[in-house]
Length: 273
Image (cartoon, rainbow, N blue to C red; front, top):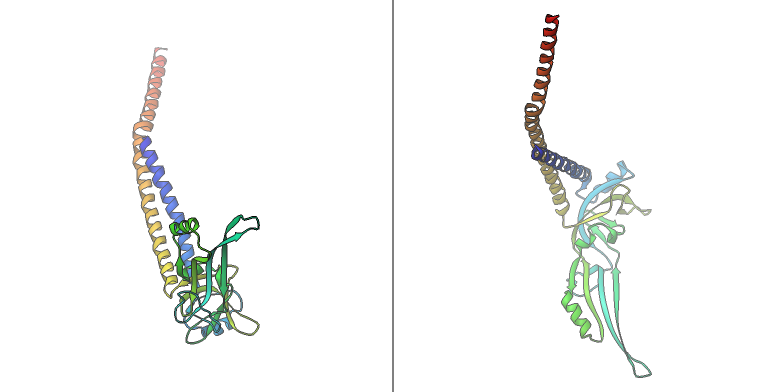
């Protein structure tokens, strides 16, 4: 009996958790699936004429810039964003003959004005480096392992060394999710909205793949919530019937028998009188 109750509670709790989690994912899927997909950038003008505020869009394009720069392993077209972590070793000889060795870490960021473009136009992304998923669009060109880092500390060489470097290359394909607006000059921009964080995905299909996975996951959890819910109900019915048969009915029958016996005794006493 106790085991059946525990099984029922366990299945019921699992069903509830799967149901809640599945519908939470479903809500996110429906939100992302409802965002307007922009195939050509020139469509944004027409869309903004119909809705002047809070126009959430999904668009894909390639990184372009008129003022790109170069970095290590940047490719033939250059980059527009470069993040590096450098370590510098410095040795100084003090006046009293003491040797002073120091290790300095430097976080350096370089960024040139850039935009997304397709065959029909261009769109500026406002504060792109703060967007969710922006780091996934960067190419890592230097990555020092932990062992190499500690080895360099034990046997430092004079000068600076790049421990980690990542850059956004010209021509990188990406997808952006955000609010479409125009600046004072009438240029198209994508920015973070009040309802939706600015999001960036590498390539053109990553966003669609994420939305498809959300749909599949929501259906998976909702389906199994029904399975566990059915099992919980079935276990409750089986053990409920067993409880009634073994506990409730004997008690009722016993109470009924006692009532009949008392009634018989009363009838007999009445007859004697």
